[in-house]
Length: 172
Length: 395
Image 1 (cartoon, rainbow over the protein chains, first blue to last red):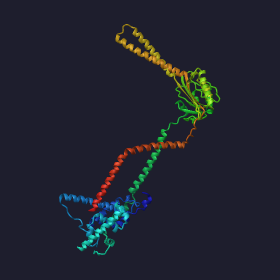
Image 2 (image 1 turned 90 degrees about the vertical axis):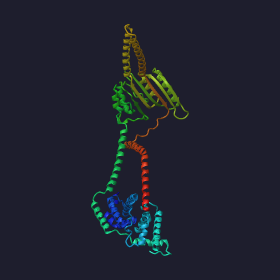
Image 3 (image 1 turned 120 degrees about the vertical axis):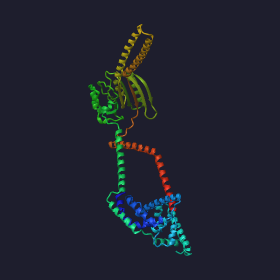
Image 4 (image 1 turned 30 degrees about the vertical axis):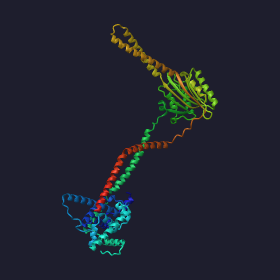
């Protein structure tokens, strides 16, 4: 990394202050549990601090880089959960404590909250990135490692599903 | 959230998005303070050199160092591979080609005329004139001498100047290669006949002759002549007068030492044979001992005969000089100018680097299957990881 690039790199404390809310919102939508999201966000920032020297502002913005780290942490969490579930299934001890505490933001209607919870993590992720963080389609596609059209389609389907489920909940 | 019947999907999505943005999840105070503490820790660590900075710089330095070492190695390898610089004296003693101009040879002739030894001749050869190809108007002298005799007096031969090398009292094999230029085809035929006549007039003979006179182009005549060693100097002078010298190479190899050693061995064998014959003449020998002695006697006689033949051949080699003469109507091809020191250094460095590159290419070829396997493995791991991520996110 050149000296100029190093000079361009923002201070970690500043980057953390600026992007904490975005990263937290993204993780919260990804895992669908507020307390887990808090833990994972904290873990993600610790990891980011450890690896801050590797951050290259020429390759991605600080927010994208922090979200990528948060994604990795969340995927690790999913893997751990997956293993736990398989273990519990093997011994028939499965305890349902997911969505114990809804984690999609204060003030959301119960229908929307429940509709969000019914979506897959991948669908919630694309909603978080495009809707909450307001990233453009190109950035999201690159971030998720998919094509731009696939990204748009995934968002469209997720929103459609969300709307349908909300409507069906309301009708019910 | 109600859903009006006439609402289109885009508006519906926009509405949902607005609501999601409005109720965006906010981090708790605990999380904010935890991250702020991390920020404070980062400020403490800021003064330390960053790992990425270090590793990248190290990489750049390592690459630069590797490149420098490769270039330096190439130069050193190139320098080591070039023939060591030796003076003309060493070159001449070791039989390497030395080219000297007629002018430079003048003091040599004078030294030779006064009976100076070869070392004086060698000292007179200019140090920087050693080249490996003869050039027009130059006189080339090749010496493959093991032992050098003295230098008898010589006469200047005008246009046909010739290097004066004779064997003196020692038995030595002299080989001379002469290339002479003649003016035209008529001259070529006449001079060829004249060369043969010279050889015969000096009690020598013509071993072979071949003349090539095409209707167009360069005409050439090749002759191999044998003349008595004692008259070789005279033969060379007379033959060199036949045309303009383009190339002259004279080599001298001492055979006296070989012949002396052979004579010594022959004497010993004769004594041994005489002793064996005397022993065999006694009647007290057992039949077994007699037959053994007879076998030994036969072997010694055969060896003696072979040695005598060889000695005769070696003596003949020393007594007859071989002159290979080429008469031509053409010129020698122009030699390229000698490259400068800088060009030579660049050439040597490039040669060294080329060998390094070839080694690196060999290593790459050997390692390529493993590199390919590693790349495939990495791709497979990445694909597996992606598929796993997709599976996890679909839940």
